[in-house]
Image 1: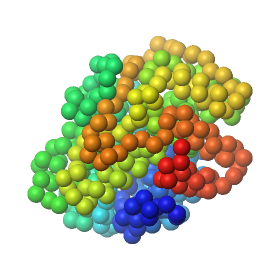
Image 2: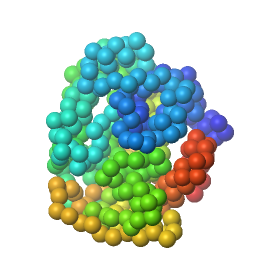
Image 3: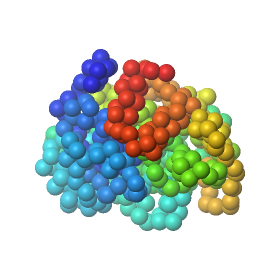
Image 4: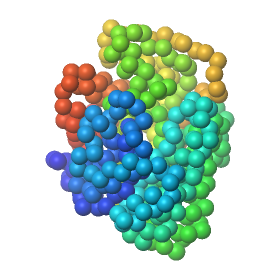
Length: 356
């Protein structure tokens, strides 16, 4: 694909990459990117969590190896990784919804904590692995409702079961690094990104999928907490950053660490503002506040991304407004029964080439 080699991303051609959570929204986009790079991908995950879902719509399984299994099953996971002998592991499998974690906390902890333990244990036993990305969330930090962004050195202590389970996954990873990987040629980084938006997300209790469903049904968008401030970013922002980190630390272990990945301060906006932009871009659509008393959620959340900018020279490419435009572009392609893969490849190429 034109632009990939020019961007230095030919590194992944022929590389064996093991991805957990490959049937999810972010996992599907990641598999799509890696297929374009020419990587040899094995995905390990449960069935896609929604109907419809991007994994099936874009026929992501074509051109990769796909194993439907549970990350909590250590024996099967071990067999899969040891048989595949990957060079790179990207651990994305998770129970990712805050409200669902209140409904089902045990499953959330089993998946997000013990799932991470299982992945790291398999990596410990697999000599082929050189680079590992453990995906957590921007919500791993103890939220003090600060006006400034959280840094990688700030306290990890998420409030709700989802956020807390991801804080635990960070601690598990740190322990495994210290206990088992100090003297091995394996580079492991944790990456903290959240509030990712993009075409193909059909999850419940997320702002953009709710906007899309309302637009398709020609109904007003109901916003649960319109004044919550979140670091919204297009899905390609963190995914490309994950791949950049995985490549750099594969070549030089000194690049391994923990990294925040988020938008510029101007794109840390209220959910009501995000809905307003979506309505303006879609046309003939409105939103309303549907605030109800429910489980605790943070009101203000922002990341300080100085570290990844300093170490890698990284910076976000697309604003929240641009990200919404891309969501709408994908959604209208989907509604019109147009070729989703063409749309996704176009957006990936535009991102790589820095199209504003």
